[in-house]
Length: 284
Image 1 (tube, rainbow, N blue to C red):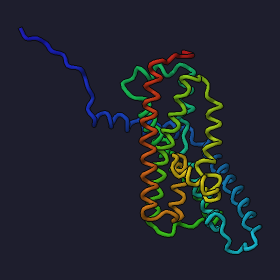
Image 2 (cartoon, rainbow, N blue to C red; image 1 turned 180 degrees about the vertical axis):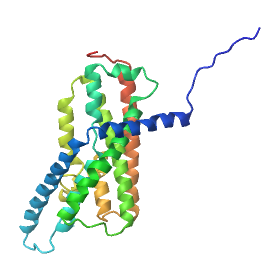
Image 3 (tube, helix red, strand yellow; image 1 turned 135 degrees about the horizontal axis):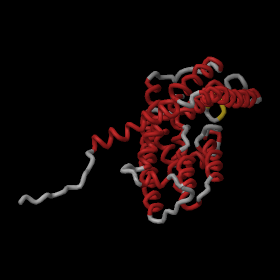
Image 4 (cartoon, rainbow, N blue to C red; image 1 turned 60 degrees about the vertical axis):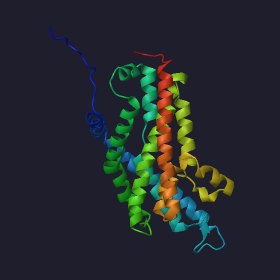
């Protein structure tokens, strides 16, 4: 009589990757169903760029040497380009992983995620990629069509910087998604993190350099933020586009982005594992 030996089922790495990549497509289709609301976003982002552009034009005009004046190492034309590229990049990298995770915890929907043979952190990362693909085609590109000619935005000094800028913004997407996941994990302890999320949005607009370039600040502040992850969300890719980072400085900036993305991913995994040992559910 032959003894039947059962072996545990395991998914190979290729099958696992195909499974997660499927979430990119699903996220793209999900956001495609609500594409009309992004058309108003084109208007709002144009208003953001216009408001900042006219503010800095007034600032530069107030300088005694107004013609060709530099503030923080940037001319007026570079400053307008900085603002436009920063907001264009933000339209591509933005996501609501923290808010989505917090909602799942509050409503008890996280229980369904826990019984699936998938890790929610990785699922949300691939969904963020799918959302970014949707934003790039139906949000970022329309914003560029409006903003670039309206404010006479020029390309980088070296055409090769287009590729480096795109790579940097891609890493900013990963970095931002992992930062949002870490913030979302706070919902397991705090339950309601709406205030935390609002504070994060306001702080990151400042700490990422979207609102004000870091070169406008004292040297000690520039040194501090140079080693923090937040500059990788916007300041690094924008300064790459402007040609302010070359040679070793360019490679160091990209390496720091990648390092912080990996570090935040690992920290998010630790926070998730900790939460799973003491999770309590609301709703249902």
